[in-house]
Structure formats: structure tokens, C-alpha cells
Image (cartoon, rainbow, N blue to C red):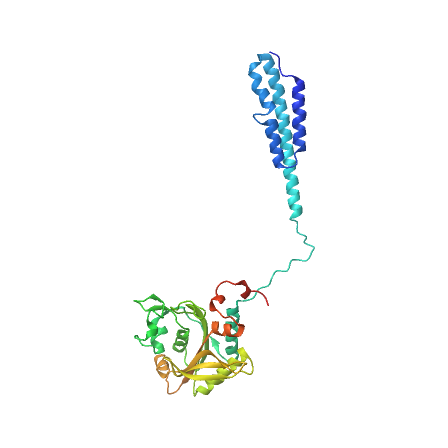
Length: 334
């Protein structure tokens, strides 16, 4: 049987080389490879037919076809490398950074609205001579209740109001930052003037004005001859610093277990009304005694400010949940 016609091999070579050269991208190159080097390509069909040739013709034709396959394979590989190089060069050009040009200006941020208001409140009292004190959020009932004149049967100690970490051991998530005041009085003798900012926890249902987690800034001053007049003057300075120089404060009788007398404190509004902002009072002598302070020699006042309450009043936030839902506008620059 006769061998392979060299003219056919020449045509396959020309067609294959032309197809690989013309391939403009990886997909086109793969199509050309399948058409000229695949199992169903004309070259593959010729190689499958070698078995029908006699030995001498098979040897000569096999060498010719193997040479063709090697040449086309090399041409395919060269084109693949060239296309990948061109693709990389194009990507590098597209992603190139002009380091001589002006940098893009990042969007500045700011502390969250609650963080800002808390810091402002603390700054006001720091300017009045109060130090800043801190304490644990997981607290023993002794500090959270007992030393604050809150008896074991008080409703505030029930699970309806308090979140217990270990009820048997009387360990709670603090319901106010007053335990920090207690720890301060136990740690150092008077005179004392501290503010205690931090998170507190109550077993409250979430709605527009309540959250089980919120922020307080409580204050304590213990010195000689402290009166309600000192308390009122301090709170007036706070109200005018936070809400405007023309604001007034109004103290209404109330009750807290750890202060006597106690008052709810309102701040005047621009339209002549009043807004309740905080609770305050004179430190109950029983609390001073429990903390090792002689109430016949020392007296003091305490107050507790809800940071969320102040933030909502100052900035027109109507729903407390807006402060906690991750709205990026609370972090955007002014």
C-alpha cells in the first residue's frame, strides 16, 4: 500500500500554522488545537490509518506525521505563551497605579453618635473636677444591690428586671454604674468626685424607648457640707453645656433606694416646656455607712444620666433602636 502524500501533509501544516497564528484569544486557540491536533482532526485520522500500510511505508509516513504533530504542537505552545503574555500586559496596564498623581481621598469617619455624646458628658464633668472611674460589667449582687441600700426583696432584684449570670451565686450583669461608685468609696477615703460611664443591662423588652443594653454616666461627689444646692448647681452647669446656655433645670421629688432626698431632673426646652433627663439625689446615709464613710462628717450627691436619652433629645432620634442597628450614617463625617 502506498504511503502518505506529502502534499496532504503540507496542506495540514499550512492550515494548522495559520489557525494558531490567527487565534486572537485562549478560546479561539483551544478551538484551533482541537481542529488540528485533536483525536478527530485530519492529522489524527492519518495517524490512525498507519496500521494499514506496509512496514516501510508505515515507517516513512509515521516519521512524517510525527514531525508534523511536533511542529504544530510547538506552534500551539508558542501562541499560547504569546496570548498569555499579552493578556498579562493588558491587565497590568489596566490596573496600573499612577503614583505621581494625587491619591484618592478616603471618606473620613467619626466616633458613633453615642460615643460622641458619652465623651461630651464626661468632658463636662471633668471640667468641673470629676475624675473618671470604671468597673466590671459582670457584678456581684453585694455591689449592685446590697451596699446601695436595695434589700433582697426589692422588685428590682427579680429576674423580671435583672439579668442574672448566676442567680444562685447572686452574680448579675450590672443594672447601673452605681457599683462603680460603691467600689470608689470602698477604695479611697473622701473627698471624692467621680463620674462612671459604661454599659448597663436590664431585662427590658425592646421598643422605641427601651433597650436591654444601654449606656449610663453616673456621678458621685462626697465631701463635707455638701447640699442639694451643690447638686442643683452641678446639674445646671451640665444642662447648659449640653443643651445651651439659656437652659434651666427643675428638680421634682422622686425615690431611689440609694439617695435621700431623691429627684427627677428636667431641663427646660426652647419652647418653654420641660424634658426629663436624669435622676439624682443626696447619697443616703445608709449607703455612706455601708461603704465605711461617717455620714455625720461627710455628705454627698449622686446622679445618673442615660446617654441614649441625651443623644435622642439632642439629635432628634425618635427610636432608640436606630442607635444600634448599624446605620453607617451615625459614623459618617460631618
